[in-house]
Image (cartoon, rainbow, N blue to C red; front, side):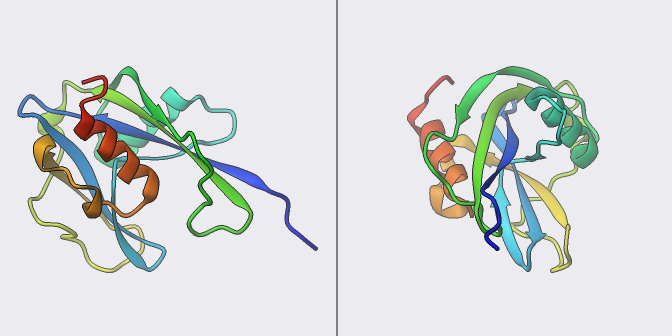
Length: 151
């Protein structure tokens, strides 16, 4: 029996501080290290902004404000680890008055290889590089950020 096609909707926040640095997360999931933007999966019955606010509260312990939409996947992207699933990612520019609460490191993947481990880093916008990100949609967003769209 063939499984039906479905969608995986992810919502991410682009949090830029006054030093023109953007927050990224290093995670260990699915038996691999990954670098991406903070955020997560949309739950059934949840709006995208509520999802993003929940994810930042759960993962970073901070409240955020959504400033504006930045990008939504505009091409077909197969989900990395699921058969017959299309990934749709939505990115928002966000802000927070609680940046001092975020525990960060300067070391890439400063986490052990244990499922769900996560750390956060600030990266200078002018040093963003597509090769430093794991997934194709994040790489696209990095390119758009580098082009200066909506900043």
